[in-house]
Image 1 (tube, helix red, strand yellow):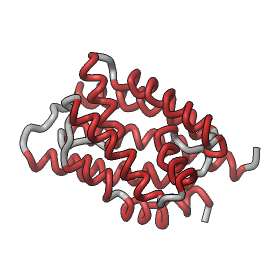
Image 2: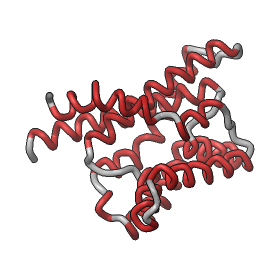
Image 3: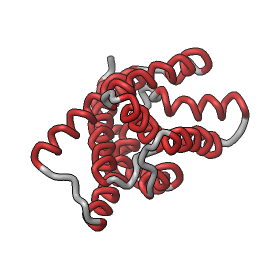
Image 4: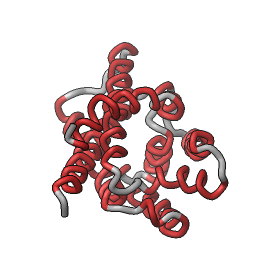
Length: 204
């Protein structure tokens, strides 16, 4: 493997670790996670199964669609995201709750959500810029766009909206954080991609 490819893998893994931490920040804010995470958490709460196990199961289903209709999106990053985001998020959650109580007042929760937005955006920038495989859920909207000819933005809105509807129907937490993740992360991801991810991943 070339040094460039190894470098991309390293920063992809870093992005996955940061992503798991961002998911936990959103969870602790009680202001809603990103749509897919909100749905997975809602399912987990309904059946009393840990978030990480439900996420592994959902990723397995989403991966079948990626394998069937868009194999070119599959890479090592696909499997790292699939297998490790859930367990890492659960581990971070347990560690943080051992030393820190979930805030009840609005302002600390707003700060947590804001931090979650920045952390999740940075993680997405690192993960996407590394370009070593697309996560099973993210591949859904890309595949839908490729097959239908519709713009990716609208396909992503569709998949995220389905997740929000399912999460809401199952009693999941839907809030400002969910809305921001669904439609507002783009500018933050673009900023981190330009100023942090590209210089780090490409070594420039």
